[in-house]
Length: 237
Image 1 (cartoon, rainbow, N blue to C red):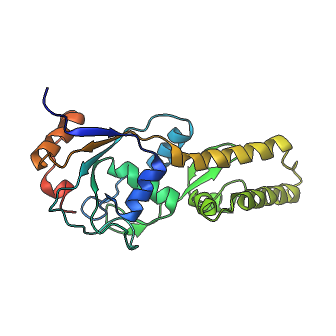
Image 2 (cartoon, one colour):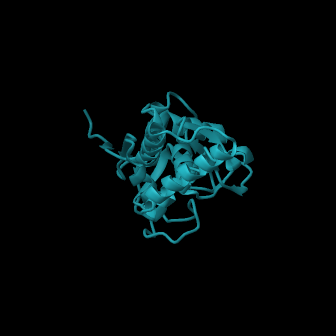
Image 3 (cartoon, rainbow, N blue to C red):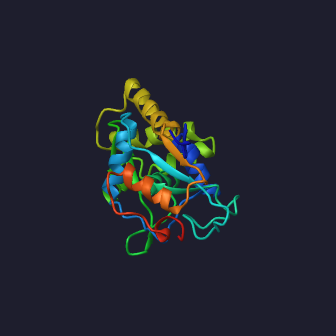
């Protein structure tokens, strides 16, 4: 058997998102725009909350001559050149980054927009954002609000405000207030949502010893015979 050109890296969603944000992982936003419909992002999050597998990520250790160009988001990156390039799983990573971090993406028409996924902690339902879910006190308008609250160490305050808003709406409509069990369910659901950050996402890292032809061949074989990637597809973003 020849020398393996890949390593298996135990990865968590939150770690991958952090590495994309700080530039250690290069995730293009121009050459290959985000093409998923928002409902597919909703289904991805729902699968994760249920503990279902959602596939894998494939990275390529950056060749020495790779130069950093445009990336998701417009903030300054800690890494001027990425250590790894995403060659499979770009749409999945972009979906998670955009929905959980509230970062704009470029759609298939190269227009910038947000992906907003609403969440009901009482029913554990995800929905593609609409004005109806924005107005509903039982829905968190966009899940990135929960992750933002966690960064500010304000999840308890966020949860209490959510319960207060739901009870105010129920009182106005002469409906029963939340029970103790329902309040516990809200806390559990919000914690489970935050735990998506530690969701395991299998990651393969192709060695920098592999050349462009090797990487293209690996991609085709792993994906059961798709069209070969060209240099422009996964390098010249």
